[in-house]
Image 1: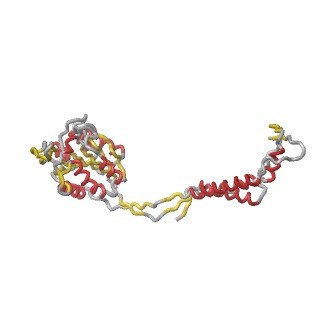
Image 2 (image 1 turned 45 degrees about the vertical axis):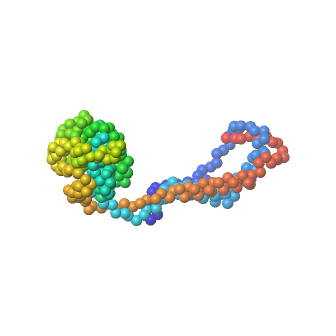
Image 3 (image 1 turned 90 degrees about the horizontal axis):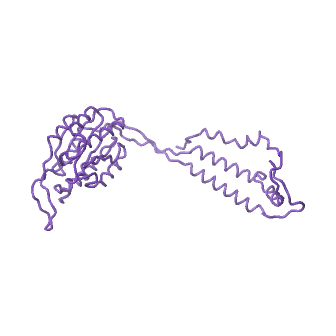
Length: 343
């Protein structure tokens, strides 16, 4: 459907005719500037005046109409697209500390790091959150907001895939990550009970300014429900000069703390020891946090003002070219060569 965003601008279309019809030309009152060779230019200009020929008047009218039409912002509105909206805000807080490089996970039979496993599984989980607003926090020694709460799931997933181990420091600040999530969800005006934080970590809180349990209390007051996921905890493979070596179990998670955080906020703690387990955890979270069936219809809008604007530019170019070809510059005339420009 074709429409105009600002149709009231069309009221200005007859303005040049109104000015020409009802306003008198300015009267010459005094000489402003004397030019000795004025007559050499005055006659050719008067002979090819833009308003003296019907063709040029038509070009002027076309130019004005094109400018008015462009200013009215013509738009093409497409068919409505259905978008599911749940109204839920969800934050992902992903641990990028140094311990996340431990290769005790597998994807397609190949050993990979814990962070690579999180990226691999989380991309499908994010894609299924259509209708939710999702944000991303990366934390290590410090916690950083990577993407704010947004419906743009592709951007959230792309920035998660670009994250690297150690990008936020080598230690683990779990309390700061929770505190940052509470702050950003408050700034997003999320209704209490509609906010969810999924915290993925493989270690114990070793950095930060906020105690994780104190941060959990603040989250509970703000209506933020936290699901904690402990990554790894099995055997860790280490690269040596002679290939991969498995020295023994990796340091244990502080599972008691993660369970306490989840329970205080009405969430749940999960332990992910392999890729399949992590996938099942995400499926359980989908069941706990179902997507609403509410729908929103959006119509794509394409701006078309560029076309009448280009036509106006082409018309103006034709007028300038016609004037340049039809105006003999420097033609001499008989009589006095002096003249006056009057105001």
